[in-house]
Length: 76
Image (cartoon, rainbow, N blue to C red):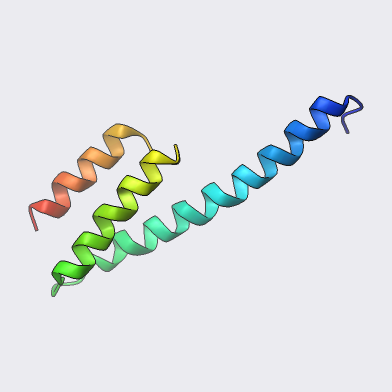
């Protein structure tokens, strides 16, 4: 366990970020799995694109991951 006050703060901040990132990544995976079905509506596609953009803006996924998946979704 950390003894320095700034280290303790950093541990708390990292725990919060980890929780948020895990939640966003889980939501993104769920949305992308919805696209695997045969009948995909336009609403599901827009939700997936939005989820990718949000995850990228929060730093959860990389730019290449986002771009690759957006390209794949738009070709459906």
